[in-house]
Image 1: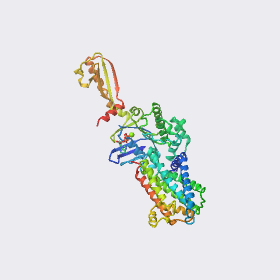
Image 2: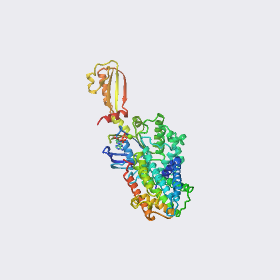
Image 3: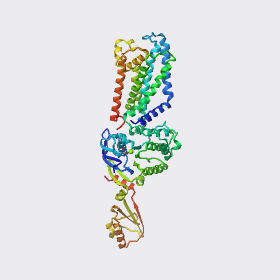
Image 4: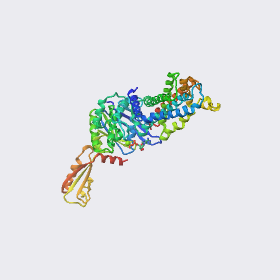
Length: 253
Length: 308
Ligand SMILES: Nc1ncnc2c1ncn2[C@@H]1O[C@H](COP(=O)(O)OP(=O)(O)O)[C@@H](O)[C@H]1O
Ligand SMILES: [Mg+2]
């Protein structure tokens, strides 16, 4: 294992984050605060409690997930797309590193960043609503698992994308809608039966549901199913990354 | 002795069917400087990229110090440093950070003293905290060299290292190459400046349309393909080459003031020259001066590229 290489990539990526601290932390925190003000306080005060949880608190896990997913994908995608775009990727490709090490460095850094961000948003939310975390270990577990899985997904997008449009397309056109429709702001039990069934094909539902369970002990779907689906997506991403490096797809001619 | 780099029957067909390399084989021994010459598009960068792991070969086998570059890529790549043809740098990083990054990437433990030495050797030390984007093109090229040297490679690839760089950097570069060679580093360079290859390289390979058409010791190459031109300045102009000298293939210079004699230096035979002078005397031709020119590598190269 080339530990020095993993460390070098990881530190490089974290330094890049440090340079763009303002946009990478302030803007998600700001937008999340706006959600709390609008949905949590303004609208939430007219909403019934869901499963015994006040609406303001109910949306906290969903909002964290929304930020976690978007940020993980964007960070990881950009982290690998940029050296490809500029051409500096040549060095990583010519180095004595395995794909596992490259992935650990890039994905590890992107996941770290979004985990920290998730925790910052959680802390921010306590300024607006009282939040309790029933299963802190599971909460952190879901946070880490989701950050890693979606950073991996973003990493794949960053390799696949051959232009900035494609880089932005996936988070914008797929992830944001899936998150909004994944129960960030409501329990999927509130949907009509047909749409509830449709929603079960949305992987984000399982993430949000599991994450929310770690907070309040209530969930839309079985917790084991949530965990299973997340792990399945993680494995799918790992297989994709393995294939990319085996064939040199978009990396080598 | 085991070659430090062994390229066996390597071919490359790019996606889309373009054949960039055809059955290239080459062995380099430790510590030699090898210059790869060839016109644009000949496949020089492709060959280097394959050896460094940036491009997959279609066929063939490559080993670095006996380590197969595919099966045993870690051991092989640890030994290699690459300075790419194009300036590809991280704009926002500092010189120090980017060079330290390279060292870590190649699996080497942090060694600030060594990095400092590399930066000083390349006159980059006072720029170590500058962001790369603030550097000139020549300075960026130095940064790329520093990155390639950061992990103490045994084999260094310089892909057109002096294309478009200032005289000072070229001079520094050649000093560095000499120092590296003295330390036993094997260097493979591609260049368009043939006088550099002529001056620095121990061996020269010529690649044309993906085929390595020639690999030769530089001195042997000069001897084999080198042409000498002897110009005989006459005291009185001639209207035509005298029939008595017809056997020598002489040419009359425009104006008839000089005779030009071109001869190969193959097998070092000087007999034709003495025969010529003998015949000149016999014909009673008076001459006031002589002057010879030896063809440079550049002339040889142009001739090679012309001939199919
Ligand atoms: N990725 C690629 N896909 C297709 N053709 C390529 C690719 N890279 C290089 N080539 C072609 O291969 C040939 C050799 O290129 P290259 O190795 O860069 O030549 P050189 O370095 O000798 O100038 C050129 O004709 C070039 O157009
Ligand atoms: Mg080239």
